[in-house]
Length: 359
Picture: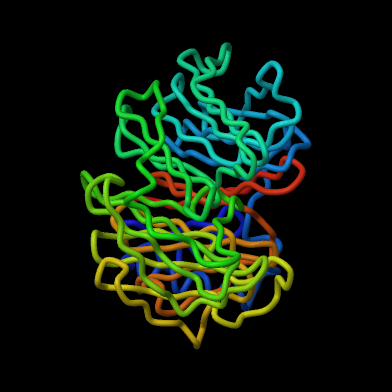
């Protein structure tokens, strides 16, 4: 059984330590909202860089990687007590919006913007190998997602009217997917690289890609690792700077999308929806939804708890995204779970941490 223990509120832990994870999370959070300031709910770790951090990959309680602007990467192998950081040579102008790590030594980073580069390290960041480069006009990669150490997809905003998607089947070479099988983009439609979590994979072959920016926010779905696609409308608001910014599936059927408008961070309109049919249809959350624009949603390993973060704060859900409980006003771009922790990163090298206790 898993229970939530906040570093700054030991009394609440002692009060609820015998409850199941759902009850403990809900009651502890209610108590925090009543008795402590929102700022105290996240524990801020030492900043080791001044870059804007949007990439986050959590391997274990001890091993966490992050990435961001100015060609920056960072890593801890002791649960955040100490961090190693660096800039990949020749990438000071690149923004690594997504990162995927296998362990303390092996990781990939991908840059967003008018130049895409994918780098790979096998020695904990001491050296990096360039695997992919794309200077094509209009290219803007939003993120990637891995099924395993050899198989992954990455996606860019549309080129010539279709999303540009590349794949690897050996963890080394990246090649484009045939655009003939990718649904046409609608006017203004794009992805968002706010947290690298607009793409999500499940099981052995399923992948979803989230969109926005046009007249509708949509989800592209493939059941065969990107060889063929279907596309499905969602009820999230969509316009310039508005749409789906993050997505997670707690099973092959149940999923959650969050977003809104990054131009209006406090607007709660149409910023969260859920599905129980693998993304074919979506139900908009209109009560107890996140308190504004949210750039990332993450799920605990067994699907029992979700956390979402954004500029104006964070929320938690223990019912697959149907209701959300505020857990602070600290702003973060990206979040992820390990066994006992919730991690988050943000502006100017900001790193936050919550603690989960397992007994």
